[in-house]
Length: 213
Image (cartoon, rainbow, N blue to C red):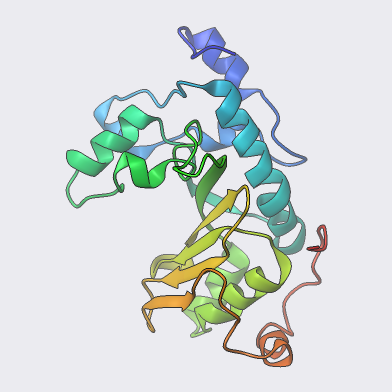
């Protein structure tokens, strides 16, 4: 597939189904792109679609099946749009392109040659409980125990988080919510025992997805 050069070609791209619940269209909206009039179009649609399928199938579908609605805040970003968000928008909303390859920029592989994709999401079911004082780490450890993500990064508003699927995932967890910083480094064993982690999310809905290997 080529980069869309017409409205109808963009429609065709949007209709590409990535998984049971998600289509490419779900990930193309950009507030920065809308406000500044910058089209959010992949330069390598085939790679973007392949990475998006990994993200949607392995991470988002199980979240949807378990928690219901998953609110997508920011998905795919074209290299042009991401560069603009990193260099021209204040406060800065995007990291440099090279750091976002196989992240929000789905149609570029990372420095190790891995395909990947990032999406920023909020889960309304958990956001309601977080607003009442629930610890964001309850959800973080649920993610760790159930999904084969590459990285998750939590934010204060709504306990929203970036979640990344990538080939050969490294399993990192970080947060801007107190306690800020790194919850789990790549290759590190969790600081909490399995039973302690499970106790955190004992009231969560039953997991509905593919069990991790």
